[in-house]
Length: 151
Image 1 (cartoon, one colour):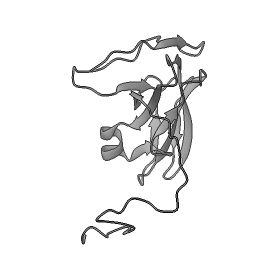
Image 2 (tube, rainbow, N blue to C red; image 1 turned 120 degrees about the horizontal axis):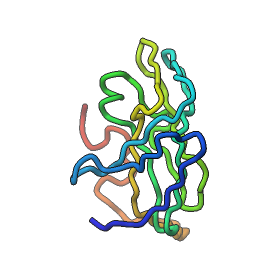
Image 3 (cartoon, one colour; image 1 turned 90 degrees about the vertical axis):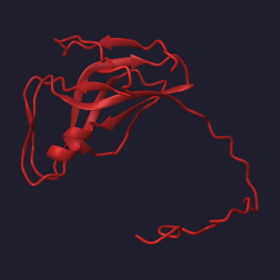
């Protein structure tokens, strides 16, 4: 696994000033923490944009930062990302915020310093589209949802 240098800036609202880190050698993501002046309570199906108190600078357009749900928070409490995966483009240097949604039937309170999502840095490829009248023939072809077997 290649290491890539990421510059991080702590914003004024971030009193903890802890650099995200990998919990284990095998971790793909680093936890992002809520950076709140006051706790935020999410009612069932309610969404909120949660600040993290950090901004980053990716080294080039070759990289993107991706925000994923924390599996334990999602599976145990029903708190996940409103946009499924957040994308931090290489030229964005503002505060990273996490769009959370409460999919449970109970209120959930997000507190300052709580681990709310995970950040993964990945290489990205730029598409170079070429217009064509026909696509390569494949076994599946244009078969859509459920076309490869029954549920």
